[in-house]
Length: 120
Image 1 (cartoon, one colour):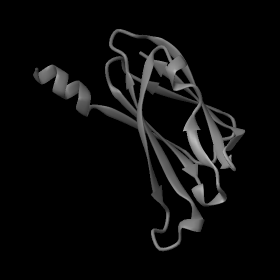
Image 2 (cartoon, rainbow, N blue to C red):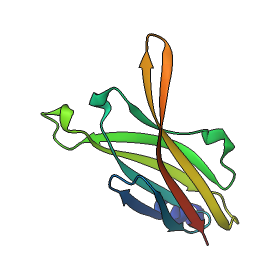
Image 3 (cartoon, one colour):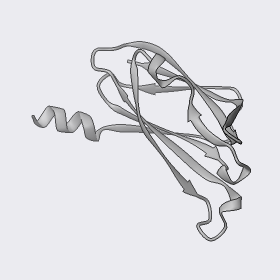
Image 4 (cartoon, one colour):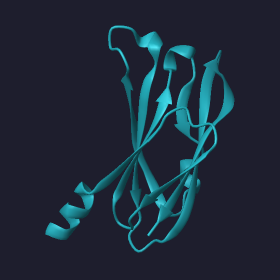
């Protein structure tokens, strides 16, 4: 039981400021991984994981937006995505992010950053 709790506590945090290209990050099998990306929901676009159900070696858990200035939400902030790395998995997992805007019930989607998780 102590091992399971310890694995849940261990996490690696990655901050990708304005990454338009691929970022490579390292993670250990059986741990949690936080990926933090610049985001600005005031633009009308929300940053999301593209096709989270297609991920094989990591599990998308949730995301949380923290504004750079809580008194001025137009300045954007940081969106932090939490993933669990599956136990006994090694290799790489490519996670693609998209910017999604809902306009009158239709989604407008723009490509976003790509993060490659190198699992050891």
